[in-house]
Image 1 (tube, rainbow, N blue to C red):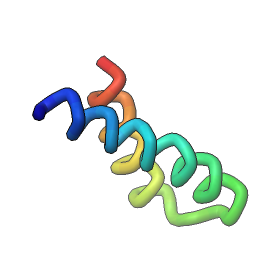
Image 2: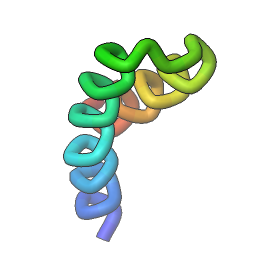
Image 3: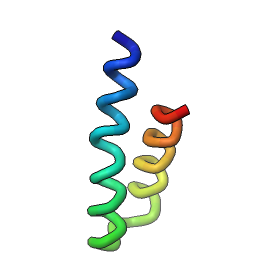
Image 4: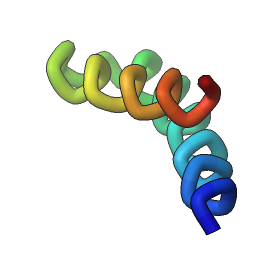
Length: 42
C-alpha cells in the first residue's frame, strides 16, 4: 500500500516538475514538488 503511494508521487511528481520548470511556476511550488518527488524516490 505504501509503495503504491510513493509510486504515485513519483509518477505525478516528475512530469509536474518538468512542466513547472517549463512554465516558470513560483519557486515555492516547485520546491514542494521537488521535495515530495525526492522523498518518494528515497
